[in-house]
Image 1 (cartoon, rainbow, N blue to C red):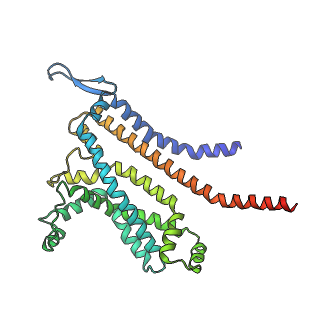
Image 2 (cartoon, one colour; image 1 turned 30 degrees about the vertical axis):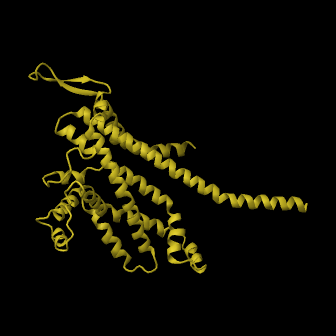
Image 3 (cartoon, one colour; image 1 turned 180 degrees about the vertical axis):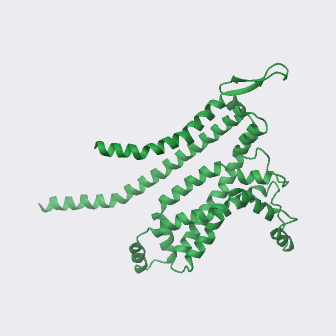
Amino acid sequence: MKARTRAATLLLTPFFVLFTAVMVVPIGYAVWLSLFTEKQSGLGFGGTETVFTGLDNYTAALGDRAFLEGFGVLLGYCLLYIPLLLAGALGLALLLDSALARARRFFQLALFLPHAVPGIIAALIWVYLYTPQLSPVVQAMDAGGVGFDFFSPEGTLPSVVNIALWEWLGYNMVIFYAALQAIDRSVLEAATVDGASAWRIAFAIKVPLIKASLAMVGLFTIIGSLQLFTEPLILNKGTGSAVTSTWTPNMYAYTAAFDRNDYGLAAAASVLLALTAALLSFAVTRLTGRRKAGATSAAHEPATAGTAGTAARKEQTA
């Protein structure tokens, strides 16, 4: 027993050291920094001093309309992006897993390649494709009578969602495809023998069997969506788009820190965003856990009822 404890301690220690260094310490420093602010003495000619202000930075962030509107943008982004991503990735994975699919390795690689492109490069590529004077796509749309301004207030959110989909669709498709490949093929063969159609096998058998992967991808997608930063930041730089410097909470914190040098406000905004992500992660985890527990209990009920009936018959026979 002692040998196992020592081995577990030896193997887990590097993880906890790294976790403390890159997660616990930065979060603790951000919380500490959010409780202070820098003020200039006199009429601004003196030096700056760090003053403890308690929760004033949190109050300032929550009272700033730009910060709250950033959460509204994130809400619209999540409502549009997450369903499209999950449905698209799952649909592509089901197509690749079907018996009719050909050249699976080629399409896996082709769909995954956009994820290998760094986010900044991907955003720059799409800015080029969104610019009317440069983009052959926009010119073709105009020639076909489909006019759409990707930089307008109405077009900015779909433009950002499109970039994110291009980056992450193939990555999540690979996760779903790996989960589908792990399904016992005898189950699918039995359904085929029973006369189930391809659609019924896909949505009545395959999808329920990979619910854990769906929940995991959904959770990670929610967390990633709350950290939206790179794509709108590139659209904000010299494109004339409707994206402002405080369009998302992350951009608000970035602007507060590096444009206004208000590190206390930036830290408070970051902590509030982290708390939001933690609460949403907890809610999604609890929701999926309850559904899994309900499905497990429902699956055990027939077996329990059958056992009880057998026991009753045995008693009557006796």
